[in-house]
Image 1 (cartoon, rainbow, N blue to C red):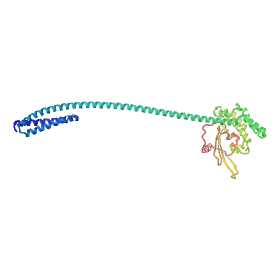
Image 2 (image 1 turned 30 degrees about the vertical axis):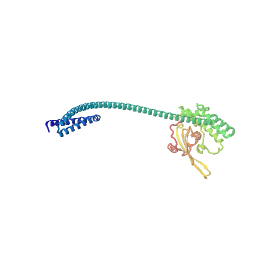
Image 3 (image 1 turned 135 degrees about the horizontal axis):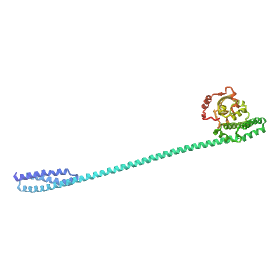
Image 4 (image 1 turned 45 degrees about the vertical axis):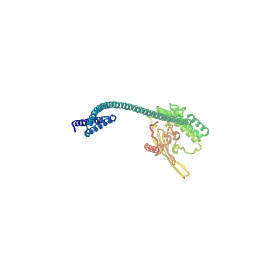
Length: 398
């Protein structure tokens, strides 16, 4: 190989090696730039490789001259392409930096927006939760108010019913036990039955004697007035007088009812017959009650309890069935009464509510104090009372 040919060959190989820089630069470009410059770089490299082969294989002088000229063209092309590639790479790097900056800014903007949206959502949830809690509290308060209102209305309705029931009972008993009615009943008995007249006159005269000796004139009082005084008055003598007048009217009514009933021969059901058969009016008892205050006369407030058996004829069974009668006297008048009869539901009665069905006689007129074995202890009475469903008595009145 001639010296000129060898020199061209070496320069062509060096230029081919230098063209490898284009490949390195292409590898650092983005895909768009690579697609744009790859064909120019590859064609230049292929042309240099072909030039090196020609120089190596051709020995003709004219071929060497063409190779030199081709080499010089390739040098200019390689330098131009490398310069363009470097400029493109720089542009790509700047574009990448700008893209990264924009992405960072966009990311920061999105994060700020997301943070703001999250904060707004948190505030909205908090507001909704507060409104829900407020609505729940208002609902609970409204529900509680409605419950209280319903309870108050129910209580008021119950009180109204109790008042109506009390007024109804008061009206019934008042109509039956009013003083004028008692006098009329006794007067009627005077015109129809001489024996009845003497008995009723004795009771009425005894009552009139009591009223004469008492400082209270209760003859014109209505039943409701007597009951209100018994329930509310703090005047102990007035309480005793009202009790006496009330039971006087009750005795008159029961006498009249018994004598005018179609079953006048049937024993009274309010107490055993033995209680009524021993009835003995006591004028001294009446005088002592109106003259002595309860705190000086324990007999007016003493709690005493009695148990008396009674028999009911039962022709169908060919014999008699025994029952028991329990009585609790508060002073002279009955407070509670328990009647137990065979094959019947126990009857529990309380004064102030069931007076028409209870024994109306004062304790001293019943003969219970003289009946051996009749008096029992408070515990015995309370045991039977509670056993059959009786309610406790909270407060005693004379």
